[in-house]
Image (cartoon, rainbow, N blue to C red; front, side, top):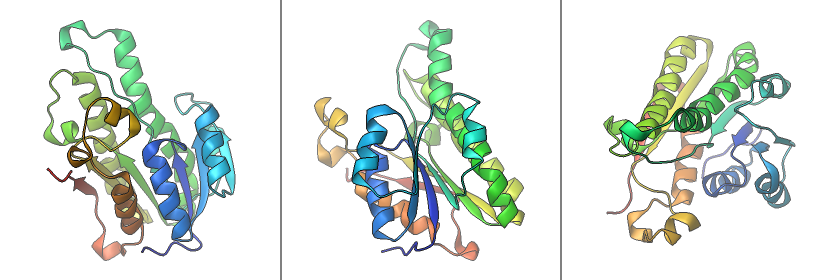
Amino acid sequence: MAKLSGTTVMLTGAGGALATAIAQELIDAGAELILVGRGEALKRAEDRFPAKKALDLDLTDPDCVDILKKQRADVLIHTIGAFSAQDAHKASEKDYQAMFGANMQSLFHAAQGVLPHMIKQKEGMILGVSAGQAAKMSGPGAALYTASKAAVAAYLLSIHDELKAKGVTTLTLYPMGAIDTSSNRESGLTWEATIDPRALAQTLAHAITRPARAHMTELKVYPEL
């Protein structure tokens, strides 16, 4: 198991299925958490996991950046995201705003919040979640979702190239399939066809502890099938 004693991790999407698995892995590894989420989901996470702070924030709102800048996080793990599918020629402005707001704008604001401290201390890491469609650069029926998740990957890699000399690195996780959640089970997906969120959590915890000379910028994780 990764050892993260003394490391403060800001975890967004607190209370979600993936974030819950990650939070448990981080706590077991000795990390301290700053939980960022909304409403009842955040309350559930706060009740379950000890945290330095819990912040109820809308990360699509630019005003959240000033609040995040007051925190001191060594690592940001950003799990917020959304999915919707529509025919490309029927996609609306509302669809566009929803996909890029949830998937890209939320990451942008979270990064703007944590980067000043990371740069000042000359050390930090930002981990984000893209998607298998983005890795393939193709998303039939989900052009906006795929584009917004590809933007996540491009943004993180650009940050890495720009700031690695200042001690800040990034990692883009590509789940190459659906994650095993209750909603995906309800949609008919079997556990064999999905990715275990606990395995993803272990992968991310391991990535945080890798030395600078063996860092990863991208990681694809596949389901069993």
